[in-house]
Length: 119
Image (tube, rainbow, N blue to C red):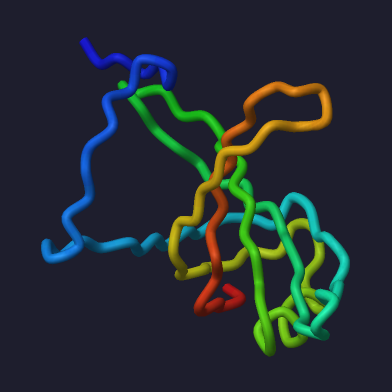
């Protein structure tokens, strides 16, 4: 049986000489659109949430995934997206772990978008 408890996860040492691949393609509907913002250095950034069907053991549910648009992609895409748009994105997974204001450890994973196609 799979152990999905993150506190029991075994850390695997990363050998950077081995090749790995970090690429994801999502096809789904926009369920939330954030506003276009700018970092202190002036770089544009925007986030959207995609609703994507996911099937596991013949049961289909909806998964919600955060997608981050950076730079010119953010300026091009975020203002023109609206809830219900059907979109395909290609990008890389990015995850981080931090403690929130309440001191609870939080882990988040997002897709950093490199390409988008409105369907």
